[in-house]
Image (cartoon, rainbow, N blue to C red; front, side):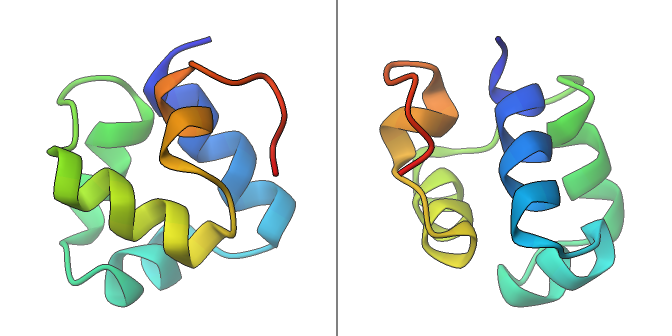
Length: 69
């Protein structure tokens, strides 16, 4: 799976919207959409922030781990 699809899966599992995630990580709604669609790859610091909000590891988002937590 891609980074974008992992972000989307973790976000949906957490039950938050793209808009809510964008506010929590201080990025635009458009950026979160592009991350999830794999149009752009989030920088490492943003991946860390997303993982913190979604209660998963950066390694999961990167596809290095299969387990959500």
